[in-house]
Amino acid sequence: METVKIGVIGGSGLYDIETLMNVERVQLETPFGAPSDEYILGTFSGVRVAFLPRHGKGHRISPSELNFRANIYGFKQLGVEHIISVTAVGSLKEHIHPLNVVVPDQFFDRTRQRVSTFFGDGLVAHISFADPVCPTLSELISETAIENGATVHKGGTYLCMEGPAFSTRAESNVYRQWGMDVIGMTNLQEAKLAREAEICYATMAMVTDYDCWHAEEEAVSVEAIIQNLTKNASLAKKVIQAVVPKIKMERTCICANALQYALITDRSLIPAETKQKLDLLVGKYLK
Image 1 (tube, rainbow, N blue to C red):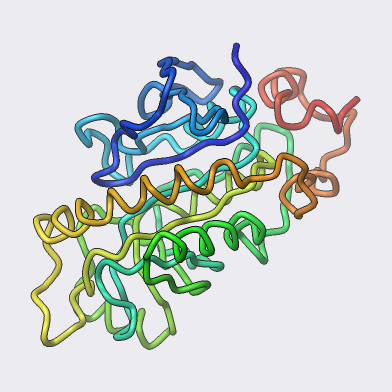
Image 2: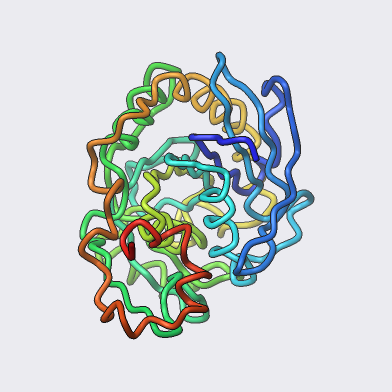
């Protein structure tokens, strides 16, 4: 199988990147089931990239139904070491306007029904997640988005809600009181699993609306989200195409060795089946 070092996850409205060259489509199966769709492998400036539409082509998969483990594990199977996640979010701050870009550095979990770890079944791991995104990749995305004309907010907290319904006004106002910056439905699980897979992960959040807290704006609707995301889609593609050649393959960040001290279980007690299932992730630490 071809090795690809850089992965891109496309969110609502971003289901393909037409400027990819030498495209190959790869259907993968993982120990955790099937990913959202086939991976689209292509080239930007001589660099191979693997693209995955998070919700599948035609937006078939709800946030709560996403097989996050399969999606991230599939990238790991391809050899990916850096993931750029593009996502639609609502703004919880007056100064973060629709059509702005936010590159968050924190997450807050308000989901209830999701598996967000590869571990269990006799093998326990506790990763460090205090700083949940790759600082190097995040900074590179921020700089490149600014160079391409975006209004960018570096840092901030992404509140990950369950969905698929949008927030009530009461919830939206509470999240603002908590100091949250943007709200979405998908990136928390991706970030956790990417860290467990020792993949650098960063979010490029495309602001589509003011959620429902803003008195002078209409309550969030799918139509408004898609309209604004479509406007930002071309920008997202430009940023991705520009940032990919800048990514350095030599990694000195915390992501590269996240499991080094995270595996707690006595090695002699780990079930053989679990060892085999997670060999791609932990094999180098169990030899």
